[in-house]
Amino acid sequence: MSRAFQSKDVGTVLLENGTITEKQLELARRRHTRQQVPLHRAIVDLSLASEEETHRALAEINGMEFVDLENVEVTEELLKMVPVKIALHFRFAPVTISNGQMTLAFSEPPVMSDLGNLRLLLGTRLRAALTTPSGVHAFIKKHYGLGAQTIQQLRNDQSTPELADEVVFDLKNTDAPPMDGTMSDFVNQILLEALRLDATDIHIEPYQATIKLRYRIDGILQDIQVPAGLRQLYNSIVSRLKVMAGLNIAERRIPHDGRIGMKTGNEEYDLRVSIIPTPWGEAVCLRILGRQNMFLDMQQLGMEPQQQEVLAELTRLPQGLILLTGPTGSGKTTTLYAALAHANDGSRKIVTIENPIEYRLEGISQIQTREDIGLTFSSGLRSVLRHDPDVILIGEIRDVETAEIAVRAAQTGHLVFATLHTNDSVSSIPRLLDMEIEPFLLASSLISSIAQRLARRICRHCMKPDESISDDVRQEMAEALRIAPEKVRAWTGAGCVECNDQGYRGRVALYEFFMVNDEIVDVLRPGITPSELRKIGRRSGWRPIRDNGWLKVQEGVISIEENERLTRRVTIPNWFLDKSY
Image (cartoon, rainbow, N blue to C red; front, side, top):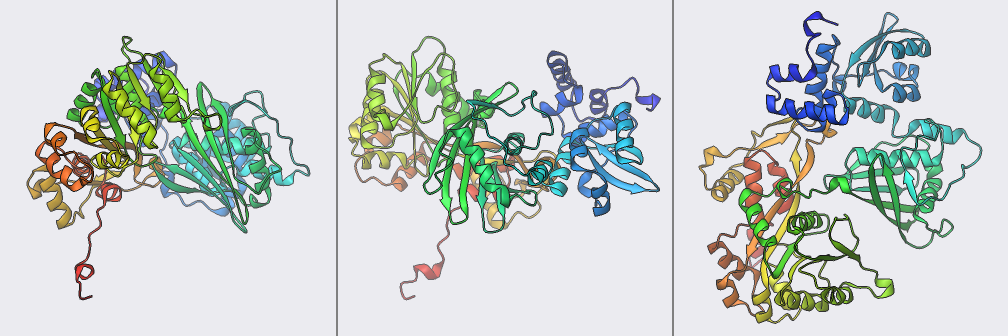
C-alpha cells in the first residue's frame, strides 16, 4: 500500500477529486457509522458517486490497479481454468494469465488468507486488481450464465429434489448449504437477481429448444442469459413456483393465478404469479410488489415544484374528487400512496379499497377486494362510507356503480382519491360523462385530474450531451419551454456496466395536472370533446405531459428518445388525407 494514501479514506479522495461535497461526505460518514457498512458502500448506496468513481478511489488508497471489465476480452482457456463456483464464492472475475501469473479483478480488496486459498485452488501465482461489484456480476452472468453452477449440479443428479411447501420463503436462508444444487436454489437465484436489478416483473417462457428469461427493468423487458441445459429442467422450475404459490402442480392445461410471500434480509415482498399454457409448456409471469419501490415522500416522485405544491394543497382539501389516470404500470398507486401519507396527519380517518394492497400504511385502514365472495369496489365502497371516513382511496373506478358512489361521496364531505384508465388527464371528464354521471354532479365534485407516465432516467455515470437534436425537436422544445432554440439542451446515456449497457438507470414520473375551474364547469355537458376541454385548459395554465417531458429533457433527467417513446404523437401523412387517393 502506498504511504501517500495511508491516512486517507475513499471519502477524502472523492472530496479532493471534486466528486462529492463536504456535506455529502458527512452524510455518508453518518450512514457508515450508524449502519456499520464500509464508507465506500455508503457512498454508492446514497448515489453520491458512481460505483466506478468510488472503486477507483478505493483502488487508489489500497495501491491496486483498477480494471474496467467492459473492456476485457477473456479467453475460453482462462474461463475453463476458473470454476464458476470459485468465482462466485470469492466475488472476482479472471482477467488475464501471463507467464504463469493470473490477474483476478475483485469487487472488494481481498484479504491475504483468501489470496492464499485461491493460489491453492487455482494452482497458479495470482495478482489482485479491483473492479466494481456490478462489473463482476455482469461478467459472471455473461460468461457463465445466471445460475450456471446450480444447473450443472441438477443435470448431474439422478433424482428430482423434493420441494417443500412453505408460507414465506427466505431467499437468503443461512441454514442451507451455500452451494446446495437444488431447484429451489436456482429459483431463488432468479428472484434475487430480479431484486438486485430492481425488476418489476419476471417472465419465464418455454420454446421448442430453449427457455427465455426476461426481466422488466424500468418498464422495458431485458433478456437474461441462462445456462445451457435449462430446457430439460423447465418443468421442475414451474413445479417449484407452483408449490411456492400453493397451486396444483399436476394441472398444466389451464391458466393459474397465485401469490408467493418471500423475504430477503429485512425486506418482505409479494409475488403475484400468473401461469398460462403454451404449445411448449407453461409460461410464467411474476409481478414483484415490495416496500422498497414505494416513495412515500412527494419530493421523490419527480414532480416539478409547482406541481408538488398543488398536490400537497389537494391533500388538505375537506372534500372533492381527485383522479389519477394513466396506463397499467405508470406508477399511479405510488403517487396515491404518497398523497395519502401526506394527508395522514392523525386528525382524519383514512380508508382505502384496493386490489391488491401493494403497500401497508400505518394509521390507515385498508381493504382488499375479493370478487369471489362479492367484495367488489362498489360493494366495499358502500361499507366504507358507513365507517365515518374523512379520506377515501378507491384503487380503480371500473364501472358505473363505483363511479356514481365515488362522485356522491365527494359531494358529502369526503375527500376521494381514485384511479381511472384514460390516455390523459383531460379525457377523464368525457369518460365519466360516458358513464352517465350527471354533469352537475361531476361539476360539483371533481377538483383535479392528474395523468402520469414513468420515464427512464438517464444513467448518471455514462450520460453525455446529445449532439443529434433534430430541427423539429429543437423548435418544439423551444416553444414548449419558451426559450430560444439555441438554448435547447439534451443528454443521452452511452451505456455502461452500472446501467447494464442500457443508458438508463431508475425512473422518474412525468405529470399532467388538469384543474377544474368555473370556466370548465360552465361547459360540462354530455358529448363534450377532449379537444374543447384542452383549449379551455390551456387558457388556465394546463400543459400537456409531453411539454413536461421536454422540461425533464432540458434538465438532463430523461432523453429525447424516452419522451418520444412515452408521448409520441402520430403524424398523419398528406397522402392519407387526400380524398382522391
